[in-house]
Image (tube, rainbow, N blue to C red; front, top):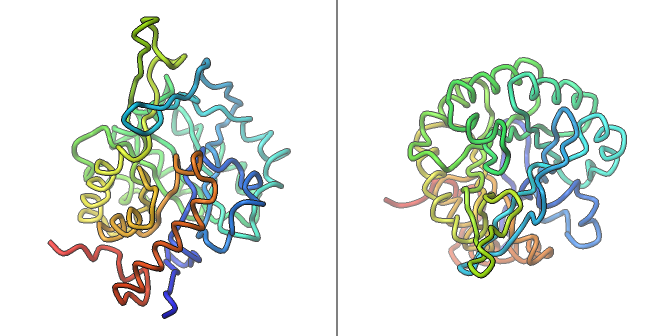
Length: 305
């Protein structure tokens, strides 16, 4: 049995539902000799800002004893001008669909970055990172404010016809109002979710393990939270949802699709297993064959409740 792996977002067909999460796959060139791009529907680049960002003080990442990672990278990046000059040529534009993650502290930042990125002819779209919990400015204050979410989305929509996915925070109990604000303002998709705020302490030294004290918690323990956000948002809005949070296996992916996800972002798993996309796609195909599912797209929202 040959399983159909294609999924669609607007008029764009992705080869598979698998995407790489922002900040975990660089610009794509780093994985060129490791990942079979035929297994990926697309990649999301690390987040790009209007001006260069040096990020947070080290240490910037630590593991937790119950699993998962806490990072306080602080969205370090070269800025949009140097990205265009030095990094854009590295993007695997003819191997898979490329979405550029964009970050800012205000509406004008997002508009400024995307105005400049429009010169890259073959990128598929943008992911608006408006909900990062490990930066001091912007971050959660934007992602939880439905008016700010609407304003950013609306102004970006006005300057591009490319696909826009808005990345939302899991920190607020009701995802529906913010999801609806993004979609009503022109979002083509939603990414659910960003990381949770977390912290680790070295009790012997009485010191935090991260230079920024707190950071974004990701990995398997985030999965139940992300599943709930995907399910709730899928009931409220009618756009594709890209799941992000704790995916490490093909079964994880199937569960997110049943909850309503169209795309499946691989994040922390890539640090432990750079070959994960190949393995996970094989596991998804095996599940479909075992259950007689001809097309993976048929699983989207097929949860029986």
